[in-house]
Image (cartoon, one colour):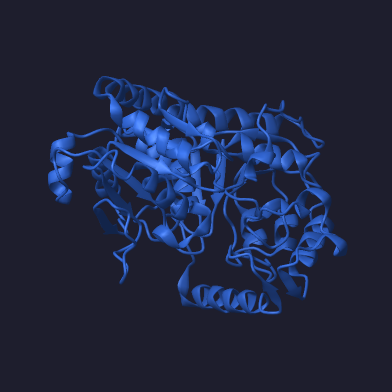
Length: 429
């Protein structure tokens, strides 16, 4: 079986790293897998990037034209918008490959136009890393136009100017006439697909992200803290996100509120923020805060997870964050809100703590509960590691993808619909 994975990048960003790990898992499983990207950073012959300066220049031009197309939209939604407007040569290249399946991932930044996706003539599996595929141009949203259909009378008040999201959604509906096999890393995102006006009749199944748990494993906590210059004998809480506190979806302000409830209760607590350097005027948490900046290599991240007593994910909206999967593999329990894809990472009071969504007092309670008992923490750490090896290790994830591939190759449209889960997309609110 020959699989062609397609992603805008190979290791730049969370979706790219997740796609590359799935590619590695398939290779380890004996699958003939290649990865095709617009920008290649990793030194790996199985990853094929643009060839020659002309292709690179063409991509930069298309990227700038696509970004300019967003300017007429005035919106208070801070997330990325991708119009997917500019045509490319990718359909021709993929159709010419000796591949049995084209496995799409995060293909934005004008890698494909919407029409390009409809021109692929090989069987498609599409792993969604956000909501873009069934939304308009937005990658995440707390509105429900994607469920109702993008009509002129359900546009949010914070948008004005050209209705880019309505226009992009209509283009998807027109160009994607044939259902594709959708895969989501979380039950929440699968339920969003099933409830969407665009993809509700498309086949969807849940396969989590893959991680090499032979590499991602715990190291000695004392050594890990020494390497980062962290105190050796105090509880340490870790928060990590690209951009650190700057993305409102990641809920840094909710963590700040939760820590205020702990002020005076855990006087020796330290917070480590990964993903940004110290700001010019750091906020006062009442606890010492250490900023690591962005860490680009797996070993440094593995050391940092091992140094912490718990990772906190206070996200308002998230799919299946790599940080949670990596933390469990390093034996570090996770505290998070019971929302979106986070219940697919945290088993309540077994591998961490799930607080009521956006209840900062409950989040503080979870942090307190996890740090209060050393014996309980040791058990949670062991459970976290076991859970990661069982669910996210390369062999487990590759086997699930092989099942999806075989199902797609054995069927002619309309494809079989996989059974629904108990999750609800309402958790996004």
